[in-house]
Image (tube, rainbow, N blue to C red; front, side, top):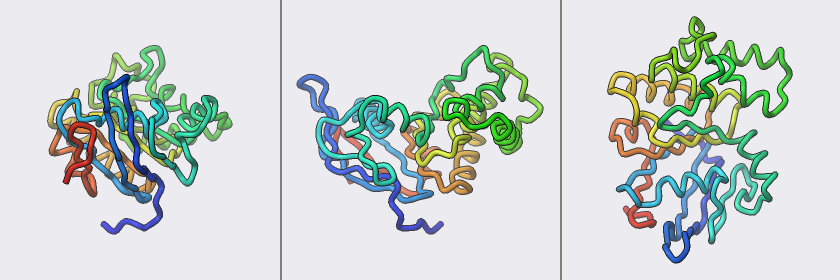
Length: 224
């Protein structure tokens, strides 16, 4: 599938230290609109730290990260909070749905945080539930859903506010192979439809295979 040249995410010379320990060094790459990139490498290679820097959870100690032309590494705390609310969606290995909320309410939450009007929230949530095939489960709470259903809800929640960037950390790591394949297919289809950038941390060959390319890390460095 051809990818347009518009770069949504630019990472330039990023480095990160925890105390004296270097975790990332000279990480440089760019990602175009609609592109899916897998971050691969052994445990401890810096994948999750890089993902946290991309999402504004951690700040790099060197280099620059731009999302839609904005230097997110230079944003103040309130600016980072706004960025995460408005322009970043995250999918976790263990779903991180709020257990007291229904599937529909979990999906709606990002829209409430950015003050989308109630009528539009209802429309977007209904469309999201239909798209992930869970309209009939809208009133179910996470404890009443299977792992695969919970992850589909988490993906809908990550995309409902139309972010520029989706960050996924081992999104199939807690699923069996059949549910994992369904979740990967959904991620591929939805990012194709929305042209959202996906950066995916994974040890799974099947998950990496849905991406257009891979960035392999070892000891905090990009390697061929």
